[in-house]
Image (cartoon, rainbow, N blue to C red; front, side, top):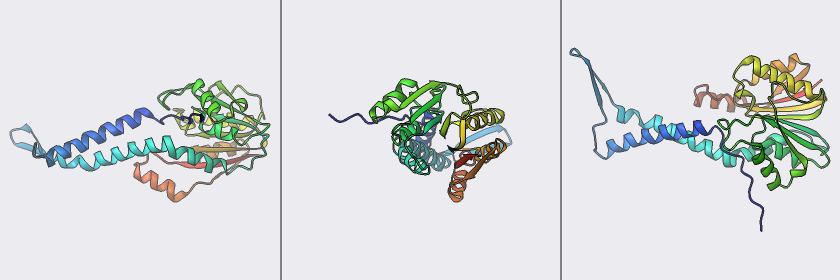
Length: 260
């Protein structure tokens, strides 16, 4: 009997739900106009001398379609795309198999398990505070189950810890990873503290790869302030495109860091 496939959850489930709801409402409004159920115009009369008419049934089409497609895209990336992207990101690192790896904000183990698959004598440690609003079903046992399903359970450890105060000694890890996690820290000071902690626990010559949806330039400056070299290795054109499409909500990037 084949082993069950790993399940790395749905990213930002609340956002996906809202996008799909807005999309469905917008498309439904336009469909009711097309079906002749109403004119598509909504009139307001705030005063005797003022009439306002909005073509709501027609205005709703493109926002509704955009939200619906974005919600579908987020489902696709959660279930298929992010596993493929994981491999491309991890290919940026030259692995020996003996590394001590830290995944900061590991969630259900996407990067953690991917790194563990590349290890032989090394070990991958994941930390998280397991917020379900960031990832559906986000809990330690789900992470360990995914490690078991991918055949790397013996090389994976998970701990509950805040990335702003990591429970590890200085220079404990060869590689640090973080994927779509640090931006969830709500303040700039908190995110800087998380970057400082990653820098602290990296060994001299250690490498970090930070994949996130915003704040990458701030991360780079903070790493440099902590004695690391940091370089954006993502596509500037691709990042700009997502920034424009999402009206600045997503500003994705990939940061490669080497500790001096």
